[in-house]
Length: 436
Image (cartoon, rainbow, N blue to C red):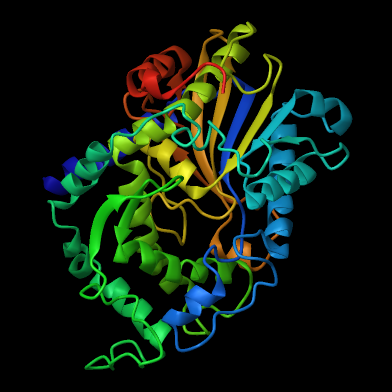
């Protein structure tokens, strides 16, 4: 009887899926909100090597800069977007003409500018690269760093309370909650087999990044763009940050000790730090309201054809690309409470070159505008192997459900009017402006 009921439910569900109406929507605009591609570690070697028995590998570029592989990978990704958007009719293949309807803006950091330039080169190879960014490099961009730019203001007490409140007021408990990840990293950094019992003491010449008794995990105020310092956890994250970039740059990972699965396991700590410091609701609201406001207003401007303030490009912009960092993509995801999962990565991980992609589409039968969101990124192996991307062999793509807006179809479509109303509820007007 139980099996019969289950079979009936499965068959009914299959019928419902099969009965969904065909997609009659036409793509009108796409907004790509992405992270830079593969870069060298942000922390200098002089810092990193103090936590390991072996020197970290040479990425052949300065600290935090996009690598040669990163440039190639982003060009490959741009080529995929070119194929997809041409098939959708948003691009024509005439790059010089298409460039008039494309708007690229990058954060002031070199790796984000470089990424945007190579994304453009892959998407529009026949048109001169045209990426906007603020100068000088010390300028705080209000889209990506609204607090430092003076557009938004954080209350330090609320910052600490909102993060501490998610940890039961005891951040140090994270040391035991993520013990397997810390044990894995310690074995790699200090050069002994994982599972050795008891774990050997650290050599006198190095510092143990997992010694949270000596360097406790805590919550304190930091400076932009990361407004929260998590003590020992923040230092630990700096030390393990190179591993995923080593994989993406085709280098021996963890001195040859880490597999792709173990790299992904280490990313649980990266995700934890991103979640606490950028997806915590109070922080996401203050730090991401301005860029969210611009994205929403840009879609409304495109749908109505009316010039509006606080937008990205003019009403005729068909392709909008914003290139920043993982902290920015994670923050916007936190504001809208969206999630994704791609093969080989941890849930909600913002991979090198990955992007939240918002499509503005219009139904050809009703004229209604809808928003269709997805997360697109190259997999770890696509990064490592510089895998060519085509429509038949695309990057990893996950449709994104927008809570409070998406309907129950396979692509989680969200009516534009409903999306605007939701955004108005989530965006803090005091943390956004209609200009910057």
